[in-house]
Image 1: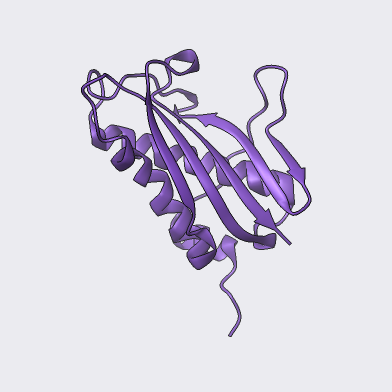
Image 2: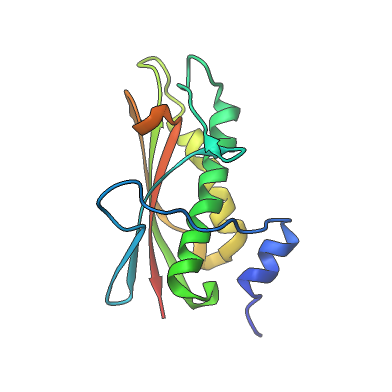
Length: 154
């Protein structure tokens, strides 16, 4: 039985991939070594602007989860730009999530689910990944969430 195209899944979810972002400093958005692709950290954006805020202060868990989902879409766009064909992805290996949060906020894992759940929805079994979620004091430009991704490609 043939696998469903990643692009068909994106269409079913109503997701149109944005243009892949450009690096903001002296780095690249993606790098490949062998069959492993490393994506640089992507910060949350809303309406084309940095999605700023601090979880547990100016943002609630649900806001953070939506922001993490938005980051996942941007990560998929960068992965598409790197590979030329998302169907070449054989496995999403790992996500690492940084959540701009207060010391009292302890739901970084729930925020990060916004990205993890979408990755699995899009890539199916190939999207099940290892993960880390950290609370941090600040993220560049005051963004609420930053996520990086490691994938394996054929």
